[in-house]
Length: 483
Image (cartoon, rainbow, N blue to C red; front, side, top):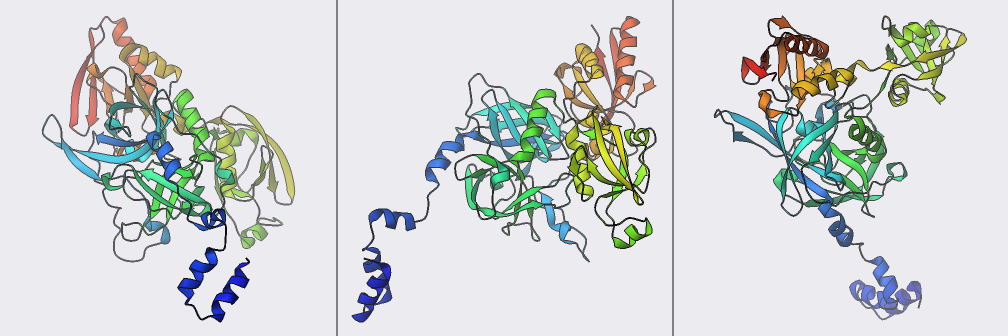
């Protein structure tokens, strides 16, 4: 019987609407009724839950407690002021010297049976000890394989003697607004919490970095969800939960996840080499309006306007000038500054690419050989030849104190030295986050300085080398054996 016929028959005998619904639905087959019932995610959640982990990161520096979002002074606030990357429930744990050390709790997920775990970089930044707790309660020590501050991703390796369940990535490019999604994580320390929602928007730029391209979701995520996976209804990971919009510190139904399409290439590079190889052009760029276009003799406002060219950069060598407008790069159309930023970064270093630039009414075709991004050496785990040389002696991985590193490790601008970003030998007394200011009596400002001074000490037959180090404990001298 058709629904309309059923409604007519029941109405003619004066039955209430509630009874009407029961009687009319009863005229349909069980499969039709089942199709009208809410779709349960129970089976898929049970299947994927073992790939989600909890992460506890104990910091070795005097980082501010981030249990709540940063507070801004009273007065005018922009929309962007309310975006914040969320740690998790934070507490203090005693250290050996009795001083409290901040502990951040976040989420992550296993991406390889060998024990590779993905999380947000801001969860583990500056930590001296990272512990991963599996779904069954097993606690495992973890080391940071590599990290990428620009996308806020970090890759960990846990110590395990068994194969672990691992996640399967989905295609975030196919995610549509309205698609159902769910998140699993550790909000407020409540392990294995599942929340559901939909994809609310795509391609969100929240001004947290140069590569913003977030999925916006309304699945509730809170402090502690940071770094956890966002699943589609098939149980595939289509995002990494990273930030929320919160005027009051709580969830208001607006969250952001790094799309899997952006995260996967980063994770693969971190796994292979410990850092992300991005191209470097060496220009400063800006967007422009019709007035600027008219003033520069341009016919439209499409492209990225070059405002400055770095001396001896790939751009200068290629002949790019201030006032040029980049309209294509490596075969990709450039409509705005974000397009150019993404195109250069994704091209990688040491590649020759062609680009079109408008110079007034003329179009110039240029070939540029991209350089190595100066910030690459600031990434954890990078194994340059210099790094290998030092690893073969003291088991240290070093990075220059770039702006990115200073921000990540909260190092003052007045500190000049070299950062320890990894150590394979805890017997040295040095740890991740320490800044080496001097080796012996010589000041250092780049990793090669440390390598050369250590090598010189060996050649002289010294039994030990002395590092002058700045850390959260203050400044001190550390003698490291060379024998």
